[in-house]
Image (cartoon, rainbow, N blue to C red; front, side, top):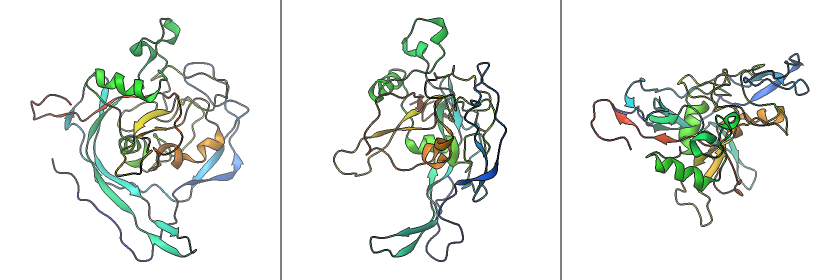
Length: 286
């Protein structure tokens, strides 16, 4: 199946503002109930205001039909499409001169992505039954090695972005709203992760779970000719201890295109990915 044509907008007057972020409304939501089960609830002392977007969702389009790939067990297909690598807007040079920044879209092939984060049981990190379904938190090399040992790989930053929000242009993996429950975040600085797959609201249209909360996740960031010292990985997403201020920069959490050059974190969660196998092919899954 052919990928959609690469598209871009060049020059000229741009009608959209530089950011597609969101703004707080004056009214605040009523404080949600305290967590009383596996589905995480926002803490009553951390109410987040209702949010309104500066611009409505503007998905780049070109989504391929589902069902073109056979994915390894535990992974789901994320149909490809167009991926926005630069938003239209305005930039400023060192002389204070403003210039139009065009939108840039590239083709993102379909791929397979872990439906949930890899668990502690899968890594044999803990023998306690109560911790078996919690997400493993390891360094990048351990995450990379685990995926490779199962014939898989870590997702690239662009693949993770595409699965989370870039294909839909939502603020969060499920949409634009902050739900009162069903996402493992806003639990406080001394909180712990949730069992994978139990946050019922944290689900993408493609069936990927827990991209919105629980733990931040390792992704591979190709260097593309970057200078020496480039760190080829980053951690994306929000986590169980993310707060309302964190969520106000949802673009940075879920859709940033930079990374790999900051001081690396020590531990993060992860999920594996694969190219998948076309249904009409007999080639082995890579």
